[in-house]
Image (cartoon, rainbow, N blue to C red; front, side, top):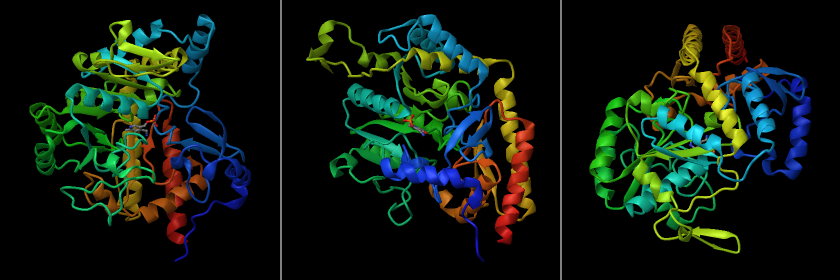
Length: 457
Ligand code: PMP
């Protein structure tokens, strides 16, 4: 059977040419490795609401939504207005000093997130998890961190292990190998991380007890990849165990924050982590991150006198017991204005319910469609994020995903790109509050065409 995994040539001609130019001056032609996919990424030129428009003039219903960040869709009028109005009002793009919106947003986050008493801002989700881990190691005086196989927390050495290991290298399911995801991670750094099996409480408990003396924290995505939920029993027991063993529990809610509940996955599970990392939706489409957590732990980054910060020639370092945290753009006022307006929109009566209802509608319709064609398929997700997984095998962790027919899914995804539905091949779907029922119906029609094209090729 010959299968089509290329674009209809005429429709992506400008994209291809521009990507060729990009490759001459940008490694791989992309500004982040994950933005690459074969045959080549599609280059966009504009966007509005739920729609992307590429340089060839093709339109797409966007389900990638900047990896989930754009919960109000592209260029929501209220977000754009609030942001530009605020910039005019304050008369600058950034103060470079403390300012009011930092407090306004912190008040909002402490009200919404059960595990957050205080907040520090960063410029990305990566920086947020990095700061959370540093706070945890400083607070506990222990060195190592635990992370779950298949969970992503940003691209730095400590956590860039066992995110996507293949079957050969990943080892024993109950005590997974530590597999680096990149060249250039020194072996001694790998030893700082312990890899745990998600949704397997017996094996996790064994590893936690064995390493309790050296584990500062466990960092986890409460919903792995934004779509595989932790089981309630698992996460409840994990909270109990980490408390008992003096290990901090860090929820990385960069994806799940505002997407599975306004107050994140911790509100769904009713579990208070010690520290929480946020990002994506929080910035309303601008670069952002934040760490929030228990007052006692967060205070470890609070300078109380000038002498806490030692500065020579402009370079500062933290002294004494203070955790160093800095960033020229931290707490950017325009970013926080966009984020606050986004949260305001989400807080409107019925907004989240409507978003979840639409996501559910799309999931159900797609499931029905695939089953009509007798393709083993399920959608897996929570709130406004889900993934399409082509298997009937139950999906509880990273290794279960190996059962899925990714070959078929990939072909369908390339077809969808020909048919006006934008999803990065094999990625998860995120919905926005501006995706319409018409969008949903068009998406289901496109899937049906894509399935037929692939099956008939
Ligand atoms: N943690 C999680 C759970 C994420 O999904 C991501 C980004 N996909 C990050 C951290 C890193 O965030 P950023 O890309 O903003 O650095």
